[in-house]
Length: 135
Image 1 (cartoon, helix red, strand yellow):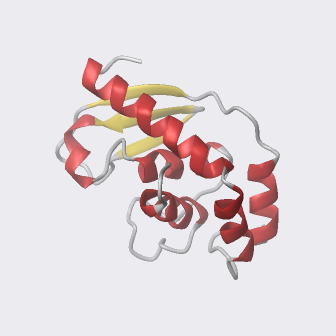
Image 2 (cartoon, one colour):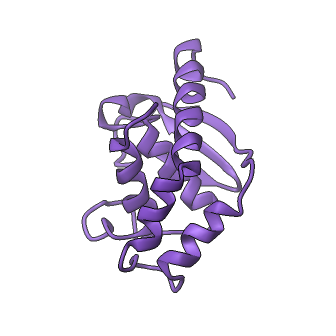
């Protein structure tokens, strides 16, 4: 895993909250009722069904430190790497973790920029998760 104790605890806590959100029937219903997502041929109902049918997702976590990149995290080969220099931009947040989980489930977007990608599965579901009330 690497990273400092602070980062390991942050990712552990936010991953647990992200998991609870992705299991919340109300959250899944919101996904299901969304008109459509960009950059996928799957319907919103298929995406929600895939999430309902997914049990535990094990993802290796790594960390890196780079100021001069747009990326706050990236998924590669089933592992997610969080940029510790981009915490103020959302690295390691609940929404960021959910975004990366969507990548691990096979959903993508075009390039490393949110502009024009807001309606993709990783961005839209990650953004919803970031603002979802956590119990």
